[in-house]
Image 1 (cartoon, rainbow, N blue to C red):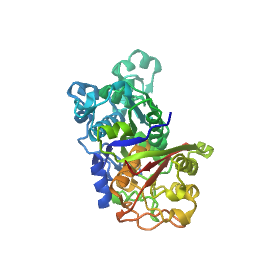
Image 2: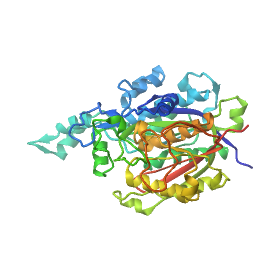
Image 3: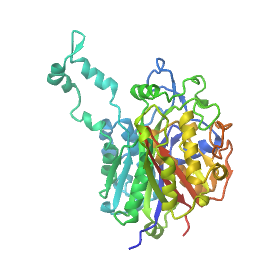
Length: 440
């Protein structure tokens, strides 16, 4: 039995640029950064004071049915982002679910799947700290008192706020997705991995549609501390937040934490066509890789991105010369950007070839989104194919040196048939997807 074609019919994006793909797309076209001084907590004692922070009034309460709003109390920030992105994706797709009030074209629950990439969720430090304080005796933490008294100061559902699989859990409950479900925790590569796996589920006929992508927020004191210890953050532009994150740029000085995520609706092509859905693009190829150098978290590595990208191109049944556009990961950590540039050169035939392919990176707008990055990057890739526009790379002015990617500070029209996107994370994992322009 031949595999089915896989269409992308819905884009759900939540970033510091706003909720919805249009908010991010417009910010990219305008060259406008959404990075600002951190307001969720006082960053004064940290070397980096800026981040791609969501709007102050962001809440999942605005994206769930009224009878589900009480559940928001047991949602960590990461879960809220995923829930909001899923709501946007389903509404954009025109598929009716229990979570959207049944508006649109219905899809059987058992044929609807969910794959979401997640990070290791940081517990609410104020909540946990207050409970721990009750188990302190004479200035020292008492493990026996913690077991007898301290733990009782946490809600019985406390742990359910911080399990990575709770992103998929809440999304599947809200939208009654009873088909295949999975959670992938592979850092920045998570989003591409979930989309690749979801596309295969649809292609094999195991689901008619799958919501896939990723979401994460490392915007908390622990997240900021860890990224600083990894020497990845920009600490020299606290007075100019919008100019802090500069992917592939000669003046790049590190990344900034962003919070957000992107979920896509992947749907069987014949199903989408039958209901006359808006089709942004088609998932044509997928590849993944891992590099053992990732075990040293202080050493810059691309996680074998060249292998992942080459596999995705081969899986699409095309050659490197057929790739018309690139959505790069572009963390703005200079050593990582160099590794990524070299990986694209290896995957697509060398610098002479890659320098002719128009490329973009979105971290200058929203910062590094970690597990949430892949879904957003693939949403941008789908928009590139849908609109025929390659958006500018915000804060990119001059390449860091050597043969680089074909980035621009200006939006460029382009005749695109295939766009490649790839990501890699701390730990040595990478994944890539090739999207194709929709052709009936």
